[in-house]
Length: 207
Image (cartoon, rainbow, N blue to C red; front, side, top):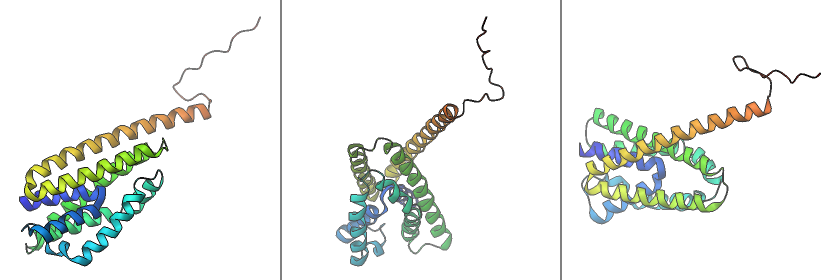
């Protein structure tokens, strides 16, 4: 259960910032030698690549429109990273356990990635950098806190990640409804022709 909880928490975090997840888990394994963390994540070459990519994302994630482009590029990367971390957490377990943890990690990462990407698209309707920087810093701090908490208390961190995932998906649903309503209003303004089922007022009579 602890492995499943850690896979779920790291999967959620990977959907937001997978490189930071690898850094936190890898450094924890390198410094603390925690038993539940895969040794592969603590390799120096893995940490070096994760640090380089995190540094790049740290900058790109705070620039309006560039962040959404980066999210689009990361659509395949973040869920894959979540799945790989889940499989590594399974360790020497049988193939079924590895498959389950891989699906949990990858699926959770995909959902949290969609929530993040949708939120960033909404923020970019106001293309000033303050909100993007604030959101990016808040995401990084949250990922760091959740993953570090998951190392010591995987079940508690999984509960926190579950709440954050549900909140993000709910926000994404609300944003989708707002966008759909805005699109309908825009179409009505662009096309003033009467639509079926909509009553049209009679033109004023002239005497």
